[in-house]
Length: 165
Image (cartoon, rainbow, N blue to C red):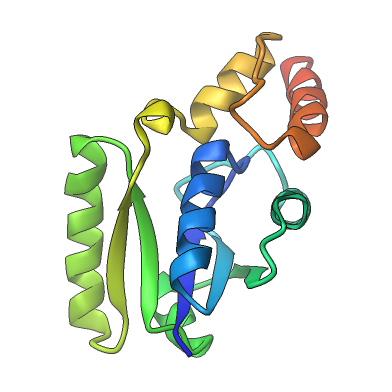
C-alpha cells in the first residue's frame, strides 16, 4: 500500500488543489491532505475552517481514499509519521518549480524515506492560487469554477467579513 501526503496551507482550497487531489487519489492507495502550520503565512481561514472546507470538498467529489488532517513541524517528517512514502507538490509555473526544487532537495537531505512527486497544474488552473481567489472574493468578484461549488458561498461570506475588518 502506497500512501501519499499533500501538504499545504489551503487558505482556501481551490479547484487546482482539487485537481491534484483527484489525480493523486488515482495513483496512490491513500492520500493525506495535510494543512501544515506556516508561520510565514497569515491565513484568513482558521485551521478548523480549512479542515472543514477540504473535508466537504473531498466528500462532494467522492474521493474515498483521501483523508484530511492538520499538522505541525517539518512536512517531510509529518509525512513519514503517517507512513507516507510520497509527498505531493503542485507546480503552476517556473517560479513554483524553483521554490519546490529547493524544498524537495532539502527534504531529500532530511529524510531519505520520503520521495517528492511533482504534479504539473493543468493549463486551466495554472493561474489559480488561494491568494487570487481571496482577492477576487474580497472585492465581490465571481469565483465560480475557482473553488469547489460546495464551499463557494462560505468563501464569499468569509471574504465579505474580512473586507469589513
